[in-house]
Length: 124
Image (cartoon, rainbow, N blue to C red):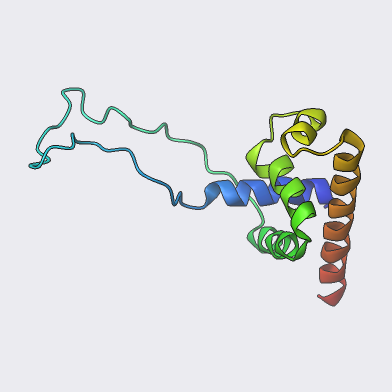
């Protein structure tokens, strides 16, 4: 598996983890908490097909990303987790980096992760 597939696998793994953020109320914020909308659960989430991913590899990628220097870690996280839909030039602007500086950082971070994944395979 190449580094691009490993990073996509890592994203799927992160997406499957429980959300730690605030949760949507299903009742009003009255003292009694007795109000239930007539339609039932208004914010009922759609049932999604389960995604399959390699947990061990995703955890290994997570370890490698955490060991990256702060600048490279930020580039990888924004590219593969936070702002996946943006182009490289848009991401560079968001991170206040030059386009080539961003691409160089992305290449370096992916190279470090690829080397770490290869080292992990050779030890098995």
